[in-house]
Image 1 (cartoon, rainbow, N blue to C red):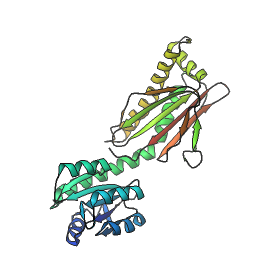
Image 2: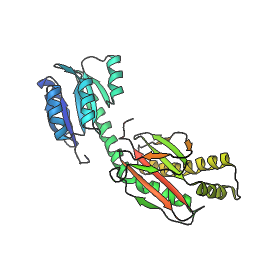
Image 3: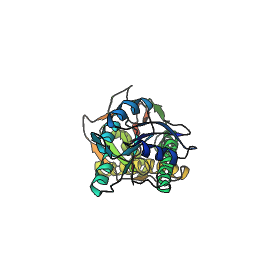
Image 4: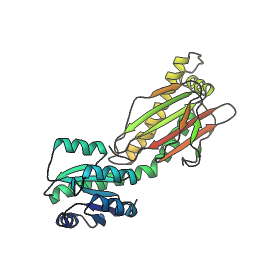
Length: 287
């Protein structure tokens, strides 16, 4: 997917409109890889061509753009779609956004408006590409820096593919933190009770057996690890603007974690006395 030029596929029931869109695209940034006049043709061609972006007419013969978009998303999960229609109906716009459509433009297509929308998309794709290239380093560095306060051990990067391992048994103290911005995702951090207590002691400078206090300390530790990593990424990637949701805590026996199919990576700290597991996943990047 990550080419210098982004691949565009055009779906429109008018050959004239297809030509207008072709003529309007910046050839330095975008490559037209194909077009379709009907939903059936789009579903046959687009998956094989694997475009980065589809421009979608909302009115198609024997179908509509919402239906076609839904079916294309099912076949190409990372696809982005810009809707185009002669009607700027609020109900259609709401349905389009609910399906995950990137933008909505009204016909006749204004070249400047199309340029602006496509340039936003082009910049968005560059930002998400940089994030995928850099997030593993940022989260590993942040985890390493912060565990050194309490644990005298290193961090090992695990295989990040869900094909290798479907599930992970959790230790019983787990924190989940989500993030949104130019990309969306979530972080899960899991520790043993013994390690959580050592982290709490490192923060306080003294030991405690208060379980609620230990969970609060683990929340704070996770916030710091994730916050430091996100700050590094926001500073390094202009326009990323990630922000965090409050942490959610899970504790108890028989907790399991399923590795996501989306882009993700895992880190583990494990020794005779300590255990920390952290998984970071990205959800494809739509706002």
